[in-house]
Figure 1 (cartoon, rainbow, N blue to C red):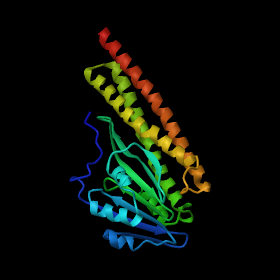
Figure 2 (cartoon, rainbow, N blue to C red):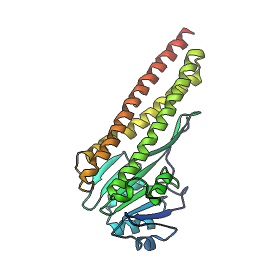
Figure 3 (cartoon, helix red, strand yellow):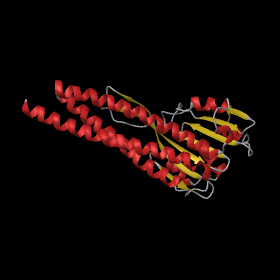
Figure 4 (cartoon, one colour):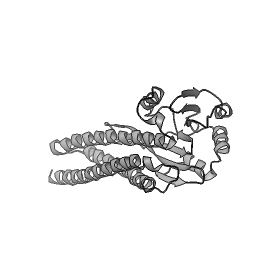
Amino acid sequence: MSKRKSTPLSPAVPKVILELISYNREAYSKIDSLAPEELLQKLQPERVNWINVDGLSSMETLEKLQSHFSLHSLLIEDVLNDQRPKAEEFDDYLFFTLKMLYKIDLTCSDIDYEQISFVLGRDFLLSFQEKEGDLFDGFRERIRLDQGKVRKKQADYLLYRLIDIIVDNYYNVLDRIGDLIEETEDNVYENPTTQTFHDIQSLKKELIFLRKALYPLREALGKVVKGESEFVQEENLRYFADVYDHVAHLIDSLDTYKDLTSSLLDIHINAMNTR
């Protein structure tokens, strides 16, 4: 299996894209391709302001956002460096970071992912992504078309929806791992080889990675669900609780797959010894 890495921050990602989506019940606007200082002048206090940053290679851009929103230097370090999922509250905002998974290659069981970090304030949400492209294009269109509840809600509901989209895609990745386990199981019974052994070991490594992504995420969501954050309205806690339940279900599936791969390894070893 190739060594798993998130996208390098520099110099492989020289491009930084800033996007501002502002909305409320009555109005919507989307702005991009502006310098940070120009984009920040477009913020509208009477609306929810979602600033998305694609690419983290420009310290100048990050410093301007840091200065404008009074972001703690340790928060910027967490954005730039690989972190376990967590929720941390500061005086003026809530920080939340997790892994965003894209797909798993069935030929090598390698998961494509990046870290995404959020900063939730009273009327804004910042999202920091390592590379261009994400899972949110369909949701952006729903905001534009005023479909669903998002235009009627505040920034904390926006954070919930984005986390929910990310967690939903974990199901797709786990389903693909399940397919790979079934394929590997057939190989173990029909023709166990050294390659089959390596396939099982690769699966075990990916399951360990998912464990490190999901268990802390459940803990981070638990802090929000308990009502410990003043930036999440009480009426929206039930939505975060729903995502918490999804993560708990994913962990149950993950544990089942872990047991299956361990059993496959035992069967493989026995088959090779018998041969």
